[in-house]
Image (cartoon, rainbow, N blue to C red; front, side, top):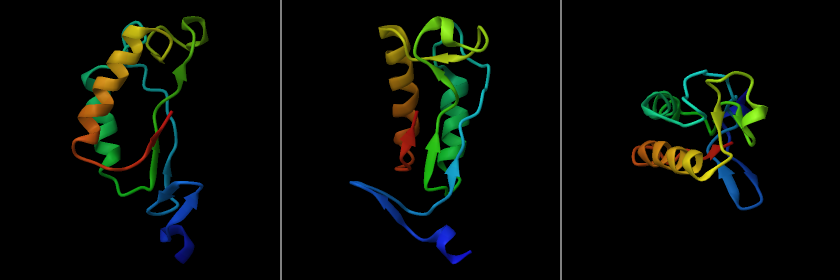
Length: 99
């Protein structure tokens, strides 16, 4: 169990511990856009003490979404909304975030 809380490195990325918040499906976006829900949800997870947080399932094409409310990263509007939500989280946490 002690290794769970030990730092680990992957190339230039070093995680504070080996706990990873797994990606989830939140069904909270509109047209694939991240919103205030994502800032709140990601922000809470970013304060958890885990070494890495993975965002929820994120589609790279609109047709790849599981539902109409899934997060997307397939056009400029999605990218801007995702970046804005992530910036809100990063103001308060330095936890690495993956997609």
